[in-house]
Each structure stands twice: as structure tokens, then as C-alpha cells.
Image 1 (spheres, rainbow, N blue to C red):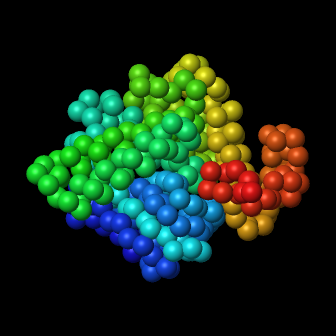
Image 2: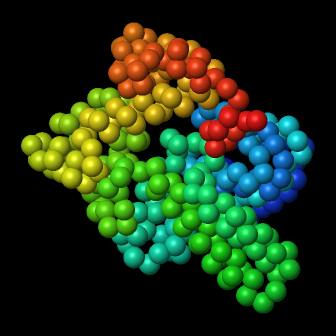
Length: 290
């Protein structure tokens, strides 16, 4: 699948669509997609989400996605790359690493990213403002648009950060952010997540690794890896048609029975029962419709 590219530090597009003309696609940049109006289904990395007016989706580099439109939908697209984040969001090097980590962390947490209620009307207002600037193109419109974009990206980072380990904050150091990012990128490859491998990769003592990770995140290394993987299994169960044995294979469990035991320990029931109990029509924020 050929990746899409952008030719400017940031690009904006908005238009109404009766059908999403592009097939499942993968970007080489970040893309924020806001639903100005309309309903339908977004599919990203095999997971499906009902969308509606006011939803905001973040697609990270290498995500594969498409939209199936039910009612005519007006999309707002904001595309930017890591270089834009580095040069424009913050001047502080550590702050840049924070924002980049947070944005990358969204790849395994699909669906509407607006978790903070007070941010929903704020995002709507900011997008309306940027559309006015782009339409009217008065003096300094480009500069003002860029400032609004910076604010939107920062708000997005805040909403994603609400779901990060409890001890992660603006003062968190570079090493633990790299470590968390490494775990997320290798979550489908258990051999890369062994303590010995992490110790060597990050040049940190094996004896100190566990204490350091817990001090920085508030949970043990194994607990974080297990819970992160189980959250992804939950997404597959609720948002895809994948069979249990297919999910077990994707996450490198020995077999379906191995996944059943691990999931039951995590949720108190096996995956099939969890899927049956929770299979209701959900909106893009994970809440029942109606």
C-alpha cells in the first residue's frame, strides 16, 4: 500500500462527501479528522467506530483507515508531520519529545480522542475559526491559522495524555518515554519485551530496570505490558469481527486457550463471554447509542 505524503509543514482540507472516495489508505504523517456534520463508520487498523458530528480522530503515521458514509458528511482534515511538531509546537526539546510521544501513543487507542468534555466545544470553536481564516484570507491569516493549529494539537495531546500511565506528566524524563514507546511498538512481539532485552536496548541495569519503571509509571513493567496488551484485545473483541483464535495469533499467545486464561484473569470472564455481553451498538466514544 503506497503511503500518502504532504508537501507543506501542515495542510488543511474540508469538504462534504457522499462517499469516501479514497480506498483504505496509510499516511506518512499525522492526520486529524474532525466531523463537522454527518454519520457513518470509520475503520482503522481493522477496528470499526460509528462516527457523528463533533468527533475528532487522530491517525498516526502507518495507520490504515477508511470511512463508510451513512449520511452526507462534512470532513475537516488537518495534516502535519513530526518536523512541524518539532519546529512549531514548543521550543523546549523535552516538551517536543512529550508531544511526539503522546501523539504516537494514539495509534493503539483508536476512536474519538476527545475525552475531556470541556475540550469538545473548544475544538469546535477553534476549527470554525480556522475555517473562517482560510476562507476570508485577511491580513496575517496564515500566521493566525498556524497559531490555532498549535492550540488544537496541544489540546489533542492533553486528551490522549489522560489515558497514559498515572505518573506520566510534563516533567517525565526522556528515557521512560522512549521505553513506553518501544513497548507499544513491539507489543505484538513478546520476545522484544523481555526484561533482558529492554535492559540491553536501553543500556540500563537489569536489576534496576524494574524499580526504575515502577517509580516512573506507578506500575510494574510486566503489569503495564500485560494490561496494555489486554486493552488492545478488548478493542479487537468489541470493534472487529476477528475470531478469538485470530486475536490470539495476532498477539502471539500460544493458542486460544492461552488467551482465554490471560483474559479471564484480566476481566474475570473469557473473551467470548466478554464480547457477547458487550456487543451493543456503540458510538465513536465507546458509549451505547440510544
